[in-house]
Image (cartoon, rainbow, N blue to C red; front, side):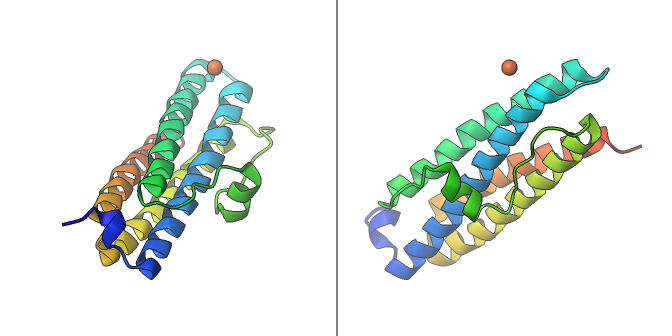
Length: 157
Ligand SMILES: [Fe+2]
């Protein structure tokens, strides 16, 4: 019994690393966006929104590290450049000149996008026989789906 990294066939490994890298990219772009909103949010709900955006970017900073370090455990190169992240990411940047409602809706949509990427990664990893990456993708997907609900609840009702 070797480690997953030594057992994966090259095509399966490439597919898993590709999915992980996309998840790192989208988590990273969203880290910056949540921090941008943490800085630039305005209005009577400043306090709780400033804090919630901090909770999100702190989680994402840790999350992107876990995903990138899984790439390393698999023996591949971890992408660590913003231009590469932006090219890969389905999450886009925001200049921060939007109202609190739009910040919340944007971040909610981003959480759903990342959750979708992680769901696809979990399935790719399962197919590859890489249950460790599958577990990480499910764990991170659960966090992003929870943030999507948390953000969505602010702009419903
Ligand atoms: Fe701060």
